[in-house]
Amino acid sequence: MNTVLDLIEAFRRSKVMFAAVKLGVFDRTPITAERLAAELPSDPRATALLLDACVSLQLLHRDEDLYRNSSDADRYLRKNSPETVAGYVLYSNDVLWRLWAHLDDAVVEGSNRWPQAFGTEGPIFSHFFKTEESMRTFLMGLHGLGQLGSPAVVAVHGLATCRHFVDLGGGTGHLALAFLDRYPHAKATVFDLPNVIPLAREMTRGRVECIAGDFFADPLPPADCYAVSRILHDWSEAKIAVLLDKIHAALPENGVLLIGEMLLDGDRRGPVAAFMQSVNMLTCTEGRERTAEEYEALCRRAGFREFRAIRTGNPSDSMLAVK
Image 1 (cartoon, rainbow, N blue to C red):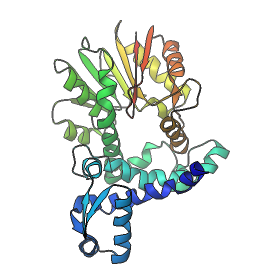
Image 2: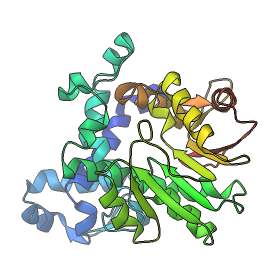
Image 3: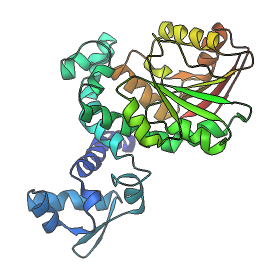
Image 4: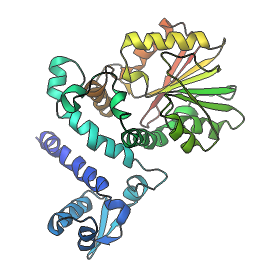
């Protein structure tokens, strides 16, 4: 029964954090509830309720009337923190929350909920990139997650012989930067859609070459190491096959493909986070999360001769395929 009760109220805890981030609570501390209500402006009683709820969740500490960030909130929820995931919280609140509201319909119909939640058709990323603000919120959300997971995705495989690392759909360049931090002798490139490139250049600050293109439609920049992180889970097996064939053809002999995704257990009983992400893919893409064995089958079908998968204990596990 405790599990059932916990799940009934789980969304309440998430929504308290979402609302606090959206209102900028963690960017204004230390502060009293009265002062925060005046600054926002907001209802004083409701503001105190939200702050006390954050205390109960250990996101804030209260010393008499003064509220201060916990160490986790200061590190991950303050928008100007170098490790912030506030962008992903905002994306979860403004986009995923609305898609997940129609999960039952997604299960019945077997398709994403963009038309139902937002009235949009076409590629899912047309919503994210509809405005500069929505694109930046989405990409900075992924940047926050990437900073947590990308170093481990790179570190668990020996890539010292790679001379040119090209991150396909690399967004803000967090994976390319993690690669350069570990292998500063090499060259790294982000290859992403044209409207992503200005933000990629801003975030990588000249350390990474940024090239505009569509990895399905355009030629890939030459490289001996390609990376796709949190990319393959967006697509069906048929589209993954097209992309893997293209990558395999572009690689030299002994070239490698680095894949970052959350892995399902082979017996499909966990981990919980990976299955929650897989259901998330149902609501917003045509893809899903997969087992290591499924990814290996896709890679070998494309012609890769070696494959290994390693759990990282971070938001993305790491796989390497060798041509």
